[in-house]
Length: 85
Image (cartoon, rainbow, N blue to C red; front, side):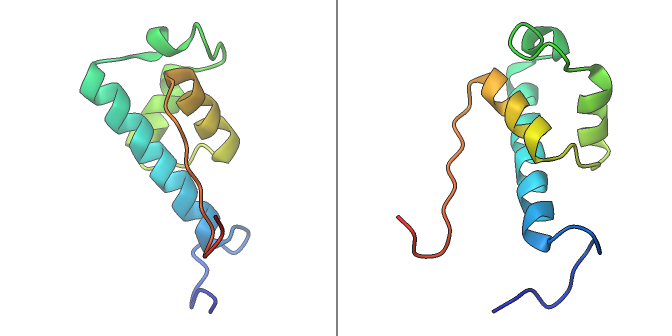
């Protein structure tokens, strides 16, 4: 069954939810370890403090940027859809 509303007319609810979940995971990881952009930059050179600040304000960075940051942090990402294995 589909979502009963679309929070952004140009973006599906699932995409918004995934980006939000990834952003929260990034903030949790860097805050719990006291990391900053200087710690991420060796593996993801285009990271800027403004990106982390945007996450803190609740602004989305997009799936690709979030996954790039997560990979740079060395975190695994697990995705499942319905009954798929």
